Length: 230
Image (cartoon, rainbow, N blue to C red; front, side, top):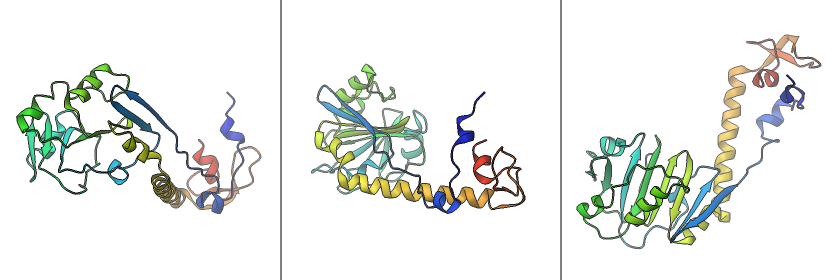
């Protein structure tokens, strides 16, 4: 079978390490369901780094952490948290930007209404449904809780809120500049690790791929780039 990667041009190592071929793509999909606007960015970003926080004290309701029930198991006994509706975890009142642990798949929302724990628990009958803009049960859940905003980091990133300005903050010039800088740094570091692991092209034999006159790497019969394409 024809392999299109086999005939792609081979860059210079320094150009590749310095991301001469890399481009940041700020693509996203957005829409509206009832009173809620939503966005699915094709890049991952901490939503707390770009949105405006509620003007009043708020709480974090974590509905998912690694698995449904993981929020309660992992956070329910931590200082400043309590279990709510068996599977979820509710924080104490917060007045400033919180620090979120993104070490696992996670879903959470900010609640700025002055609701009691039992009132919040009474709105969580649909907690755990897939956070999908095409899932009608998900929107029933969101409309019942009425959070300030909801964010999911499971199958990519998904964010929804009533205030359209919160959605627009994901593609503001400042946010995209920050995302691009972070993504560029991650890509540069990843390529450096790959080169350190497989390089250098020391030969003395040349790469076995047809027409390639680059030296092979120490651990294979191909040059660095042809080995990566295997």
